[in-house]
Length: 376
Image (cartoon, rainbow, N blue to C red; front, side):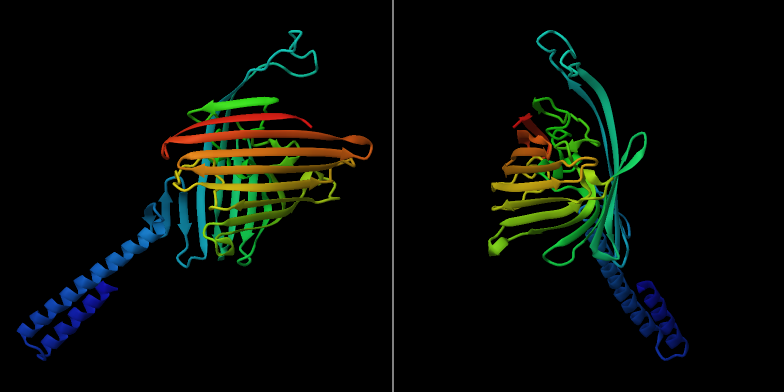
């Protein structure tokens, strides 16, 4: 636009000179003023263009007018009117799992009906996600696919920020249970969850992340990590006018294990309270916050839809989390109950402790986890 205006101004001056309305000296003087103004305008437009590019980059590198990239954030594609946005990212994990099992007291590997052989296996997992918003910044979406020998949908949902008080989410999403079940695999310190494929007692420690894969594992034997359903959720910051005090809730109806019979829906809920500030669903205090934070949460799930059975299964859990200056601590306690009309109720209980410390902020963490499972 600035270049077009400069061309018009030059042509007008040429016409005025040709018709002898202005002298040669006046022509030179006016042309110099026009060139100076045009240079200033071009500089201002360039500054504006750089400011817009920096804003769109969001701490990343601007590749094009509406394409940005940030380390750890993937590629963002944005429409010029702001109505559409798409982020493409992924996850690649390669690891080794080794389980050293003890033989029974008689020196037998399977005399008591349990497989007591050691486990040694290499594993690999690929994930791709697509997220953003469409038609309205309040209408967001998220799709994550597992890719191995075949491609399957792990999560796929649409979320609408209905009002200041709630969000409506529908599709295949995480069932709101204890904290670790809500954390994405890429943000788990050990690369796996405490009770995935564990024995009665399990201890993990390390400097790097030992990766054990859980794409098909069920949480608590019957509550899946992700399930089809409809969910309401929201987080409230500065609760009651008190700075940093935060409360969040998740409440949903899911298919549960009864999806094949369609006779019941499985309700699940989670409520969390952070008196001194919200703690994101990430394991480790990577930001090394100088102020201590902690949170407590309770969750519950109910499923009466087990196919060809009158079993009622429930799960409840308590979890605690705390961070301070590079220190991360979390504790979870779960209890599951399976009850039928023709048999006594069966209970299972499990809990774990996990702690980590950033010995080099945002670079190196020491961590330890202890988990235990049993009846009762």
